[in-house]
Length: 555
Image 1 (cartoon, helix red, strand yellow):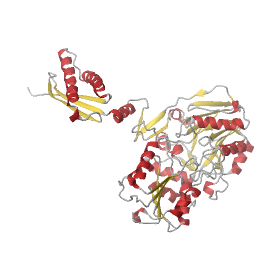
Image 2 (tube, one colour):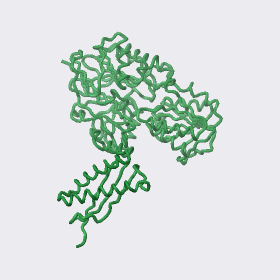
Image 3 (cartoon, helix red, strand yellow):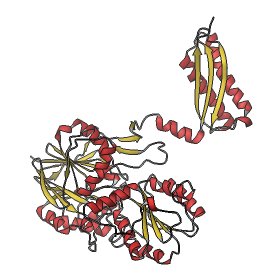
Image 4 (cartoon, one colour):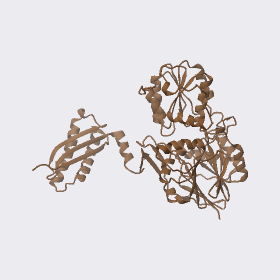
């Protein structure tokens, strides 16, 4: 009996954190290992990554991990996984490998088991045949992956659009291999859902050339454009326009410079000779240039914000500048994007926000998804990679194409669908999953107190009150000293400050008289009393931090 089990450790009912698992009998294959950006209320969190507990427990069964392209939502958690399990074989295309090698070096990872694979290849991982097929997406070297089972291929589409006008082979959509897979038999197709609510094809609305070319023609001063550094397709469009209109190009982002260097090294794309001005030769007085301000996540918005507020020593905006915002906010970065826009309108000349509804991201729209389903002809269809409304919209596409509801599987993270001898089993299996919050280099327990404390500090502030007592007699010999941060202005609230100190003193003295003094107990009791008092007087619930310092005094 053959058994195939498919589930996600991340990427379902959310934007990012993609990680999918295909179990072919006893062999485990992983697809993607990405991050998700934190929500605005998840203070101090750098990123959110999948929970690797299941993979840790079944490490000996893992035969390979496939990273289909170089975006953070599918690759940025890989260093964390390989730090725990460095011997897992990882398969990725050459550009993705160059990008990851830099990340691995920063994390101090060595002796990894990295395999470079072509975008259109057939090879074996252990006993299993694997096929890759090229897809058109916003970064070069993207591919989908097919895992052969006894009952047909399990295919993961990766991100894709159908675009027949792409001449660069590193971005080309490989329709031939996709058609061949459909002919050979597809048990299950896992297809992306991000663009599943958009009518028509994504092409040609994914291109920004027609949208921004008028500004190259009209702008008398400098042009600035914000672009995510992993959207290489769009970067190339801008560089080609600069070449057409004889404008020099300044790339203001080290990671994007490295990426363009990788593109040249692999022969995928070369910036025209003499077009780029290195930052070392850049002067803010230069004219007739375009500055590409780039980054990832919210870093791009913070970078522009610093330029707009004159905190950047190298670049400042002029009233004659035209600024094009072509990096739409992704979930978790909306506040930074709004703040950046406000400052831009204050400090610069003309600001144009490229409408994302008019100019599509490079994800499959409805007609693209229909074509993939039509060519693959899967027995079962599994929407992945998207929020729940997008998964349902994707499922509806297959339903309208004639698929029975029992052939369409909408999962949640940790919910496993099982196929035995090519037939879907009626009951789902459950894999325990959580999400891991990364704070700098440390992981946080999402159910812990740290985030709640940070939220409290950000909204209601903190009050620190300290007292010094004699260690032997517990007599108060110093203080109380009260400090307020973000709660009240002390000079205008002397009576509150005095009362806070009195509450602390009384709590300690009463405990000593009643023979129940305990340092921790007194601090807890005082915290509760002070918190209730401050709430009555100010309407706020600040973090209360009482401190009792016990010292030995000379007799």
